[in-house]
Structures are given as structure tokens and as C-alpha cells.
Length: 110
Image (cartoon, rainbow, N blue to C red):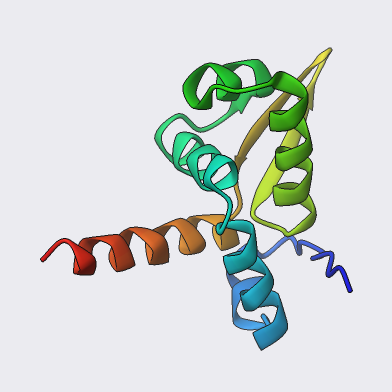
């Protein structure tokens, strides 16, 4: 069963409405090394296109595009269309997911 998140205009309000299954889905998305690296790249370099994400993460471009689509469907990434370019950035939900990963990582490195 695939869960597709619908983003609301008020993203902070949206975060408060997350159900447990949606949170689990977000962590599943971060369970893949490519997707996690993509999220970290988007945190460091917001508003970049797929080619730029691919330059930071590496790997096959089609594979990166497929993973980005999964992140978008999970509600972690938002797309902004500008002409023939599509820029990607983290949603508030995505920012919180990356923060939780970084906190977890920080606690492991004690």
C-alpha cells in the first residue's frame, strides 16, 4: 500500500496532522542511501534541479529521477517548475525528517 501525501498551503499545520503510517513512510524513504543523500543535498543546496542533485549524489541520472519521484510522492520534496527546469526543495515535512536523521546520527557519534 503506497501512501501519497497531499501538501497543504500551511505546511506547519500539515505536520501536526501526520498520522503514524505517514511518519513510517517518511522513514522508509530515508532508508535508501541515494534518497537520504538527495535529501541532505537538498538541505545544503535548496532549489536545485535534478542534474545538480545528480552531481552531488552521483549515480545514474534515471535512477536519481526515480528516487526523486518517490521522495515527492512521500511529501518530503516539493517541485517548482520554471520554464523547462524543475527545481526541488525540501518541504517542511522533509526538513523535519532530515533534522530527525541528523539528530539520530549525532547521538550515535557520542
